Amino acid sequence: MNVEFKSSVDLFGSAKLGSIDLKNRIVMAPMTRSRALNNVPNSIMAEYYSQRAGAGLIVTEGTAPSPNALGYSRIPGIFSKEQVEGWKLTTKAVHAKGGKIFVQLMHTGRVGSTANLPSGAELVAPSAVQLSGENWTDAQGMQPYALPREMNSQDIQKTIEEFVQAAKNAIEAGFDGVELHGANGYLIEQFLNPNSNRRTDSYGGSNENRIRFAVEVARAVSSAIGKEKTGIRISPYGVFNEMGAFDGIEEQYELLAKELNHVGLAYIHLVNHSAMGAPPVPESVVQKIRNQFKNVIILSGGYDKTRAQSDLESNKAGLIAFGRPFIANPDFVSRLKSDQTLADADQNTFYTPGEKGYSDYPNYN
Image 1 (cartoon, helix red, strand yellow):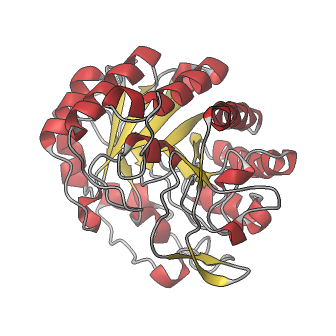
Image 2 (image 1 turned 135 degrees about the vertical axis):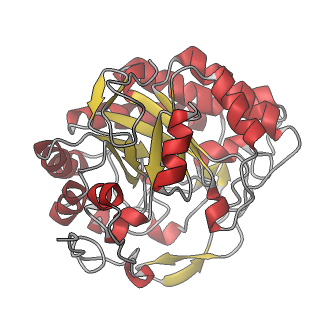
């Protein structure tokens, strides 16, 4: 299921992702934007994504598969009927402009405050290891991250089932597929990393055990909606949410890639946060993942056009993801192709409600 080139290897040329036709090899990376009032997708979100449908593939912001996953203010969910109906506005608008869109399923795990959770929900994690610092809540302002409850075996199975139902809901909502968020220190990576996973059962203690949850979620979701509609994002060496490197990290991610290849996922989306101050992902890790995983690799992290084209031509990646440039440049793809000046985004409005700093950025022309 590698990307099939219809012409020479070109960032702006068409490609296939599984059975999905992409108009170019540019991916709009997932970015939390916190515009979903009451955690329900809405019309301004539909406008925002449709404005950026020039990308070959859009991956949405992290979207909660269950009430327990709503660790941040105003992040969307996809576990209720109202949320599914809300997302239909976005998928319809993106498809009307010839775009393709995957929803990113993000369970925040220990990352969050109880003030952001609906009644009856709770913070759960592989282990009862509290995140330091604070996060924003609309109800109470800045609040310390709460101590999560360690998941038991029933919790783990229930959470896998929630991912599956969310994936089915995504297809009902019109998405072309789903991306599992296994990066940035959220629940799936919390299982992968011994900094947050102190378990001594079959889900912790060794590389084989720590990857188990990620592989089981990937297998269950791909069985439910199709492996060609399922991808995963990972961030080895990322430090966000108190992750970071550990002994055996290269071997663990090599093993994870091997197992995900057996599942047959459509892609692995590998993010390198070095442009934002994290340690770079060593080339050896990228190569080990590439050697083990035979379908599409998406690379992201501080790319410009020259480096993107180079990595495509050298077969390091089949698609290249760009994040922040899409915020202030809804027509980012055409600006990049024509070497037009890129606008700067207002960081003060990255996570605020409403249209300002979101759907009100103009096109170049």
